[in-house]
Amino acid sequence: MATQIPLVDYLVLGDRPHLVAHECTSCAARYFDRRNACASCGRTEFATVELPTEGEVRAFTIVAFAAPGIPTPFVAAVVDCGGTSVRANIINVPPDPEHVSLGMQVRLATEVVGTDDEGTEAIGFGFEPKEG
Amino acid sequence: MASDDLWILGIHMTKFGKHPDKDMVDLASEAVLGALADAGVTMADMGVIAAGSLMAASAGIGQQLQKQLGQTGVPVYNVANACATGATALRVAMMAIKSGEADFGLAFGVEKLAGAGLLTGGSRKDDSGVFTPSGRYGAVAPVDGRIGTEIMPGVFAQIGMEYGHRYGGTSFELFARISEKNHAHSTLNPLAAYSKRMTLEEIMGDFMVAYPNTRPMCSANCDGAAAAVVVSGAKLATLSLEQRRRAVKVSASVLTTDPWEESCQILPDVNTLTRNAATLAYEQAGIGPSDLDLVELHDCFATAELVHYDNLMLCEQGGAVDFFESGATWRDGAMPVNVSGGLESKGHPIGATGIANVWEVATHLRGEAGPRQIEGATVGLTHVIGLGSACGVHILEKSAA
Image: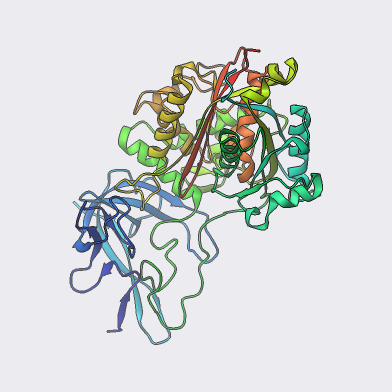
């Protein structure tokens, strides 16, 4: 199997892929980016927390027109994972308003998004409809 | 007029649209000369200049203008603040007056964006070389389009959809009907970039940019400029009766940024800072939303207009869909919104927008809006929002002189 690397550092690969966030140890505000301090309370201590891999679509759009090189159409969304908002694409579903809806229950899924010159695969994530 | 009041003494906007033969200094000059003439003053009277341009603030557009219209040596502030750039420039001029540094201030905003296309969203390079994590997310490749979208039509589409998820009642057709209203309004505005009436079928059948926003539901990139001369109440009291009669009172001027909210770094929260700005503005002006005769709000996309009915408290919380369905926001309704045609048809030359909407309201308050005049208008509100985020709200009142 090819070596793999996550598309972003808050995606943890392995047998059970999941997302992690930096949580402020003082006010519990959560972030995905490298932090200088907490934008909510200003403190600088963070702990790493694991996010639920299931959630609900709180907002979405179907992007049909994008910058050169970005395949369209695709579904961009905000998914509420147990109270933490996550930005992601909705994948493994036809990108139309008949198949994507507000309040839809989804779960994390990964996919290969590219391979570099050394054969390393970049693994991205999205959310797919939860069956049943 | 109280001596510490602030007033718009003169104001002007160019036609919005395509101006291939004019550069930014030409457009800004036209707006500034128009505003000075409207005010009955000259560049020599201006104690401060605030120059708004998202694209040209770093190039010193304020000093470029001075080199054509008058190098008087007064301080110039070149301002960029996303789509709130114009409102920010206006506020900078007003703050200088408020501080006592100047009696008269000039604010202008200008942009040349005709044919600019999407203004945000990273283009996708080929994934090649060796993957190396970089940036604040440790990304090994560009993420726009792989982890959601960065394009404005898509961001604001989600903002409208999120409102629908929270309160219900939204649909593609509902958002399209908001756009239908603004395009209908634009037919009465000779300065609008697009002034063609569009049917609901035409709007819904047009090119889909980011569901549910089709092309006519997006703000129109275009060229344009607007300028305003502001004056202190103390100085205005020394001017002619005609100047005092046409002056428009700035009852509130507010600029806010987005306070931290749970999801605000995932999907921009344009709601909280707008509600905060509106609350402060109504407090400053000593009025409530029901006192407003017209509103020019930031309909950068049809999906945005809906949420701002609620954010500006023009309706009860959660009631924006019913409010629109009641017909209130059409020009013959109880609360006319975007009688200029809004950003979707009048156009959105970013730096000019936050002064052009003040021009629109001021023109109605002066009773000089011609065929699109809202009869008897005495109080109006303007609103802009720039992602990042910044929100500017102004409340304007007709002069009693």
